[in-house]
Length: 422
Ligand SMILES: *Cc1c(COP(=O)(O)O)cnc(C)c1O
Image (cartoon, rainbow, N blue to C red; front, side, top):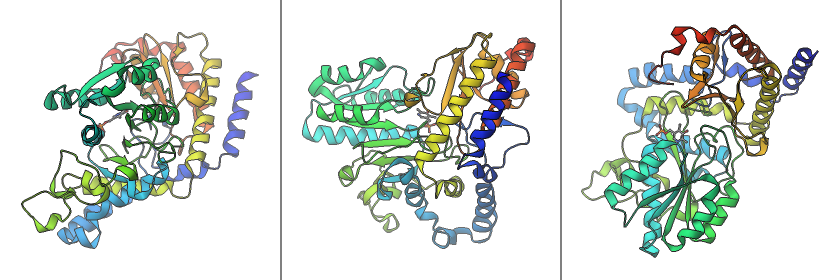
């Protein structure tokens, strides 16, 4: 029977999974199948302990001496250095701070500045229409302040990205793309696109929100100029955990960014009148780091030490493909349409299914302890965070989804009410 075949396959895949021991690192609620680690990673046990230590001991007992005693002041670079090997970068090229949105403004300005030192005519920021909204909003905000003669957003269809670089020629300054599409999970070819942009003199910024911690990234090898990413998704850094910035070594030292706060100053504790940018990635810092949040993130990242991004990617592909196979067998009679690519090579660690009732289905699943999320207008989005999920969990989730669909519990009124956060 098909069902026992799938169950056997799940067990066999789990038995040969080199990352299966990592589930012990997470404090997951009993009986909950968490398919939303791509939106908010679950709580690592190490992070829970660090939270207690940083609040009770470091803040509570050691008070302000902790800036030196527990090296709070170095957290942005120390955390950046831990993220570096996960994205194919040198430790000196990554720093943790602020949110992706704020960091985008910094790297966009840095990139525009580098371009406009060479040619005033390079002013267009090319992006794609279905990019994550904040990426587009940040360019729009910057354009309002700088004026269109310094910064103008051009958003094109994803298929037209390479063409548009050609078309805009010497007026193109920056290509700003999200590596893995937040809805569909489609992966852009980072190497090919970065190279094509460079051939036309365009700098490239990648948003790694749905890549870091799930994909095998090689920013240095792809000669990426700048990147931003968040840490509360696959990196399990906790709600609102700080984001990170990557800048290629060749650009460091030539960075000007407008959020020139005192923490980015070369000698913040001399309290001088004039701004002087700090060395290396420090110049991307603005204000005081979010110490509690960053300490938790620092501990959460330790789970990744000793494992390779290639192993994470391999597990992610295996989970995603297994789920899709089980889903298409169990739910073939339901009106779900897969909107993610079917080719694993161009698909991130998620699957998106369109369904008219996807919001209500998602709410019903939550009550059945299968947590996924809904993305407007009609997507049920399933995330496969590789460090704590097993193939057996996924088969269990598909079984519960089948039950919900057959019982039509999602038609009940309480599941149709929209919450503020989906
Ligand atoms: C989650 C996400 C963000 C989040 O940005 P913040 O400013 O850190 O809230 C940005 N970009 C993409 C593509 C995302 O998926």
